[in-house]
Image 1: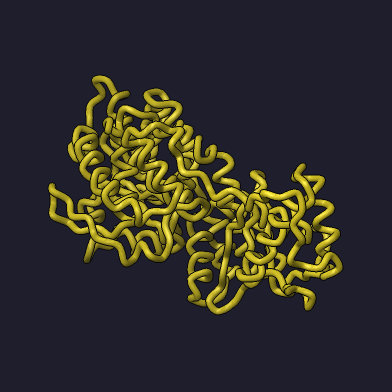
Image 2: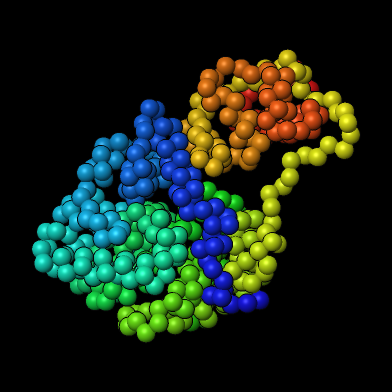
Length: 419
């Protein structure tokens, strides 16, 4: 297999889903969740992207209480300054961003953000950040466009409080990147590639077919350089970040690197982790396996596609549901459609449940987008036959499969006529 750095990460990301579409799918999921916990709540793009909002919604989805709208209002009021990415500037940032500061801090450390309250010191750091963003866009414009779409906020930490933390991000507070007080623009450019790759992975993991709960029981990877042991999710995230760093390293020319740079080590580490992942790829879902193999050198056309809808080998096949059987959307189900056409649906159960639906199930649930009245199988079948441009028998099998899937997910009730 070829080196991961020889292939374009941004092109392969786009083959899975273009960055704007992935961001829209992620926003769609968070908007659905907000409406589940606080009916009628509509999140703007900036709120749907805000790390604190995403953290609070994530807590609610994990079953750790409801959604506190007051915290969303506080987050929205926190001031940022534009350096090509939003930089936390408000003197209240330490309180508002308590979660990412606590979660990402080295043991025993209490990192403090630089803000406008620090005057010239903040201004100096902000200038380096802006130059670092500019440098990244200059050296690797396509990569910058791909990764920065997933960075909603950057927080600069006071050097004396960072306890050696160079840069950090967390899947528990997605969208925010923490960086140590920079000395060089290149430190910022590298940090944004490193942590931007993690943020990209976080979004892919919640919207695409990457990992499932079984990943928690998979083998651990042990690094050769530090002997650290990582669970599968962290291993994949590290491989993905090193792959992006290795590619970025090809673009930097004679730029001066920071003292803690990983760029010269990235190619070797990406290869080591990637080979281990290939030996454990059965623990990955289809999109993760495809991205792994494509970046490790397998032809892109070998991507594993989602299972095709049921195929009908005869001209006639009687449907399993009576045409006058009526299906109903369960009363507490909410669903949203992304611009890609994919539908995310959920119920505020204990614990809450959220599902991304496949193409046929998305179409089927979409028949309730205008009203929640019961729909007959015959009515849906006529629409499916026309819109899917297939024969009635083939449409019936696909529609039945979608309805059974929606029923098993607890979204749609089956009629009494179901056999």
